[in-house]
Image (tube, rainbow, N blue to C red; front, side, top):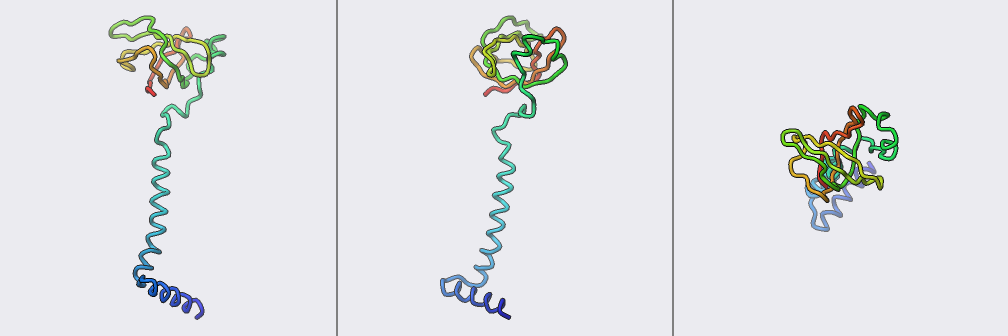
Length: 145
């Protein structure tokens, strides 16, 4: 009985402030709905701005330069800035020298024609790379940032 009196008192005090029982009911229903919407929005948009290569391990450049054969067949993320275009062949792709973010070294990468059309010196990219035969860093996909 005490709980019912408290509820009646709450509705009565709300009515004094200009809120009817339906307004209080709407507000009490709306608050959890707003909280749920905020939570869903946070979960959906939490992935925004994250790299699609974020799940990949960064290429350990210094170790790669010492023994590239140890990395054959592995896939990594490489964050780098294009330093120079070494060679381009139509229908095949280009070999670029890139300055890596995690090292002071430059490394050559092969970018097939279908992976990147307009690449310019100075641009920065996140790249999904695979180490292929001969230790070649082969760019499978790249995103400018």
